[in-house]
Amino acid sequence: MSLLSPSSHTPAPPGTSPSRGTGRGTRVRIGRPKRRGNGRPAGRRAGAAREQFTAWLFLVPTLIVFGLFAWWPIVRSLLLGFQRTNLVDPAVWVGLDNFRALFDDPLLGTAVGNTLLFVGLGIVIGFPAPLVIAAVVSTVRRGAGIYRFLVYLPVVIPPVVAILLWKWFYDPGSGLFNSALGTVGLGPFSWLESPDTAMLSLVLEATWAGMGGAVLIYLAAMAGIPAELYEAAEVDGAGIWRRIVHVMLPQLRPVIGLLLLVQLIGTIQVFTEPYIFTGGGPQNSTLTVLLLIFRYAFQDGEYGQAAALSFLMVLALAVLSAVYLRVTRSWSTS
Image (cartoon, rainbow, N blue to C red):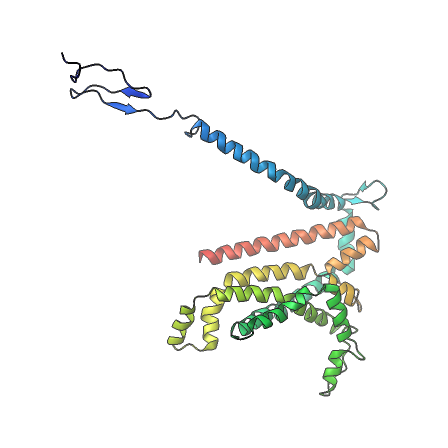
């Protein structure tokens, strides 16, 4: 018998396993690395574990910082809402007494109503203004950068400086607004001294000071709208208004929804304007929830009631955010 005949028995190479003979010779099957656990090679699983360990090693300092300066104050504030303390002597657990005292205070209803009024005026006046200005600026071809700079300039000005500037504008004697309106025979108006106009005055300044960022966001979103959509609408005979309603606004719907949520959260937490402009007056007509929290804590020394009201505000903002997410999810699936 020849040594090269098909029936010869030769040892299988390492890592292979012989198969049954078929009369045509011996076939071999190349072996594969042994797998363990979930079917991944042991070396690859070890490398992935090392990568995860390195990632967590870099993440731990960030988690510690967030825990000390963000999460722990939230937990501490929640616990403080069930205690009575002056932050010096040991705290006394009082249960729901802070919440009962809070709801018995008639100023709570006033503060909530004024806050809702500020939110409503902010949506009616301050929410469409950035969109309109962005639509106008987007049509400018020459000097567009200058207009963007001028629109964003109020955001760069420190809030306290802007409020003090507008406080001079609102001066009932020699203020800029009354002087300008006096040239056409109007006024003078008691902008901040009258309960009827004080909240509107705060909304106007807050709109001017905060709309620059929204304008830039709208401009960036408008730049991403394909020009073919406008051209197709124009070919179909759509005018400027129809192009805005049927092309621009549907394309900007996600951005509009996001900025609406941001404005709602920001206006509910309004504090700087009523604190510096009026201090909550006149006749508590500009007293907001956050300003009432400030009074509880730093004027009355009722830190427990301040913490309780802060917890209720956080709860309201969480519900508002959940509703927004639910609505936007229904938009995306429709």
